[in-house]
Image (cartoon, rainbow, N blue to C red; front, side, top):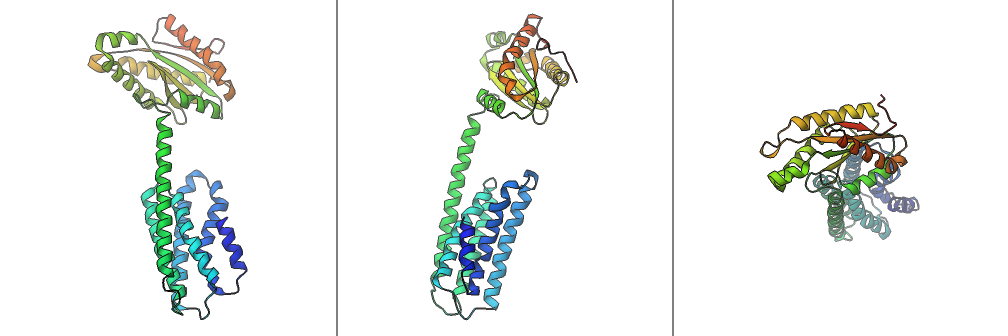
Length: 321
């Protein structure tokens, strides 16, 4: 909206000095129009390219103003446009680099300096308004600081949201994260539930500290075997859940067998050994996930009753590849 307002105001002006606003509104307009459709793998390069274009345009206009000063300055509205566009544009670029705050700060300070220099160059031919460059500098600095503070608060909110979806003991996602992932699932796959066998005996014989170390160790095994696009959750106590989108039951069984075998041979706290049982089932439509959970839980219970340390399928779902 800012870019379009400046563009509209520029189109009404007869003075060529309004062209000095070009490097402020043009990159901002490009970002506003196309940023949403930039592929994620190209996002970093596009951000840097647009920022570089922005700074090059500002440097170029600064050089143009220095070597080819205008005899007739534009009206005060031209300065007003710069004083409006500079600070807000600085904030906009800060927001674009919310994930890289140091780079965002460096680019914002460079933008602040070039914008302030531009105002000073623009006012130079007549010597009027000598304080405009200082006003521009202060306005941009305040805008940049406001943007950085907003980014800091946003990052804190993101960390809080992430912490709310993490199990503090194992670092795995929790049930709240599972519910959200189930709502957002976009393809078919396999749901698996895992349970450590006789885990209560470990707590009773070796203490809860040893039990915690076992849980963290099993979580590490799960993460080591997890394929791309899949996710692991601590369901509660010694229970875990896996969402394996894009996998067939036979593939999921091979994966769970690998996990089971590694857990079985691994030595945890004080030489403690543990085994696990698992149940799995395929969901064809993501909306079937809540309904299939009870069936997968029943398969896990069947694995326990069959002797533990094994993987069982949902009834009526033979392995298929």
